[in-house]
Length: 75
Image 1 (cartoon, one colour):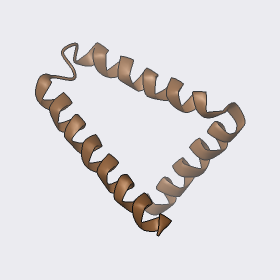
Image 2 (cartoon, rainbow, N blue to C red):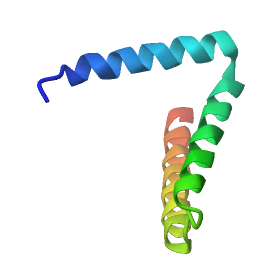
Image 3 (cartoon, helix red, strand yellow):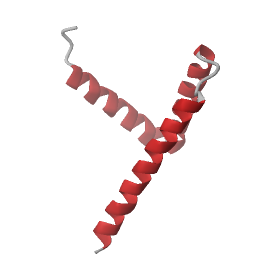
């Protein structure tokens, strides 16, 4: 476990940043869809109602934070 995790994270961020810059934003959606399909193969019932509710609550909170941040910036 003696791995340089910070370097691994930087390399991963650089790899995906360059890939999406080269192939465009749809590449990000393609990768996300591949991950979604992989998850569905392993867990066909995913996401369950509880997971969907938690995800919706998180996105609502995030949207509210963006709204407040935008309002603060405009002043």
